[in-house]
Every structure is written in C-alpha cells, then in structure tokens.
Length: 189
Image (tube, rainbow, N blue to C red):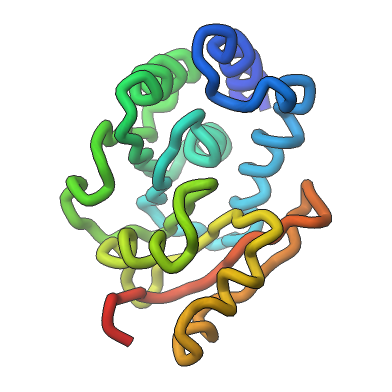
C-alpha cells in the first residue's frame, strides 16, 4: 500500500503541470482511479504474465497493477510523449522493476503472448479487441473497465463471440461495469 499512497501523491503533484486526470477527480483520486484499477487484480485471481495495459495514460490501471503485483511483468503501452515521460518518472519514483513502458502506438509493439490484457478509457470494445487481439492466446485474461457502457458494448460484438465475455459490476462505482473474458480474439470469428 505504500507504493499506492506514493502513486497518489505523485499523480496529484504531476496533475498540476499536465492534465493526467480530470481536476474534479483530484479529491477522490484514491477511489476513482487507484481503487478502481486495483479491483482488476481481484477479477483475475490467477493472473498471468505478462500483463499488457493499453493506452496507459495516467498509469491506470498499469502502474497500480505493477505496484500491487511486483512478481508480475507489466507492460504499459502509451504513445503520447508527455504521458510516457510521466509513466517513466512514476515507475522510477515507485521503484517498479517489474514494469516496462512501450512509448509507441499499440500497432508498433512487437507481438508477444499476453497473459492478461487491460485497457481503461482506450477505445470502444470492438476496436480495442481488433487492435489487441494479436497479443491474445486461448488462455489470455481480459479485464476491461468500460463504465456504464459495458453491457451494451458486449452486446455489440458478433453474437457468436459474445460468450467469450461477461460483465462484472465495478466494486467502486455501482453504475459501472468491467468486461471480463478469457481467450483469443482474432479478426476472423
């Protein structure tokens, strides 16, 4: 928890110079961002490495996962230079030796087998799956916080592919959902 408390402080300080999170959420950073990210670890109890976090931005959930699970390799993908610089400073400040940052677009990341894939506020579910599917295998766990649109986004998938996913109610927001699934997603059903 010390690392998470330090992340909280680092984020609030950095947010003064770049808008990592909405200013309205600063008083509730712990619940809105840190606890919201931490719940993902509990949704995949047999978490597999490496954990791939897409569009890491402010570091959610990637930095939280890396802080909570030092035994797990966590790879954060972020293309925006200022955000990459922030993620590097945060990783160093939190001494997260298990965390690697890919400062590029997801399309430019060399393919590897991801054990777990997460993305928070990255893209609509169908687009997210199309972009990240090449990193998935039959045993990849997907944990995708989608807010109020979670069930609707799952329903928007091709009918024969929906069964791969279900929606868990967020433990930090009663109106939000997390899309959870397991398996390989490919462009062809």
